[in-house]
Amino acid sequence: MSSAVSTVITGIGELATNDPARAEGGGVLGLVRDAAVVVEGARVVWVGPAVDAPAADVQVDAGGRAVIPGFVDSHSHLVFAGDRSAEFEARMTGQPYTAGGIRTTVAKTRAATDEQLTSHVARLVAEMRAQGTTSIEIKSGYGLSVHDEARSLAVARQFTEDTTFLGAHVVPADTTPEDYVDLVTGPMLTAAAPHARWIDVFCEDGAFDVDQARAILAAGSDSGLRGRLHANQLTYGGGVQLACELGLVAVDHCTFLDDDDVSALASSGTIATLLPGVEFSTRQPYPDARGLIDAGVRVALASDCNPGSCFTSSMALCIALAVREMRMSPAEALHAATATGAAALDRDDVGVLAPGKAADLVLLDAPSYVHLAYRPGVPLVAGVWQAGRPVVPR
Image (tube, rainbow, N blue to C red; front, side, top):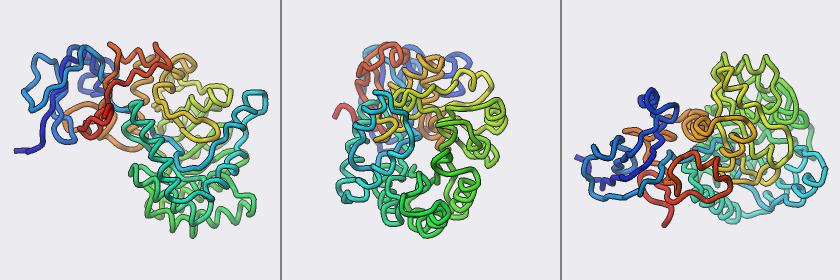
């Protein structure tokens, strides 16, 4: 018998489980009305109608409010120093976005101490948690030297196991693309790999081309790292096709896609992770989420929290933008920000509220998940449980 304290959360007006076993009656979200959840230790042990809930050591009354799985943010860049608010202001007054501003953040990040970087990441993670995000991926990419990429990942690993080596973010000004790819696939990868689960490449005009991306991902695979890819953010290109060819679990941005890209995504099963906060912050066109879903492509949503193209930590904002600007339904958007976000990290233990899954859940100060898009910008998170423990409010 387990000695862990059990807690029943009852009085849930609407529970979004994302449990496929409940999809027939509850749609893609596996909705349960007048529900309860029982948590024991770090896991969910029972889900169902409140009238059938088993006894537990502790009872919490949700008061008719909605409960959803914790958000899974599968794309973020949190290890950095400084900000680029001046760049944002310039963009909002007519200057186009380019990737060149990354080098500004690199200089400030290299100058920061480990303690300063750790403190900054801790603040952002707490900010995310307060808004309902319970699982995150964190990339490096603002060090771009052997030492600074390794220490960036070591900092990130304090907060998540889903750390991603993004040494191939841009080419530093003091080297050539050829020499830098050799560095990324050699000494930098050797130093970074012990702290990373994933490897990523910014495959884009002004960054790395398809051949370079292929070589970097292959080197990462040889070192035991799973591949990810930034692709087709700024223009049409071969990055999405490369991700599908290599069978990557996800490819991120997917703003500029042609019919062949969409077909490749649908047939390969590679998840298209869309980052609508970027388009909001850069005034680029939004990805065609509706077209992707209708074509059979799996779509995830993530924040891309970073100091340059999208400094938001709010997954609720991403949901609202996906519904309003990308024609996703509120149910599709929530599922994309939870269960499919988890799938984009190749995880099945989070993003779903079902027996045996992680007890990561969010209490909304609203009767339905629909309010995430219906009331954009309103702080609706009334409580957060992470691994079975209440972390918001403290």
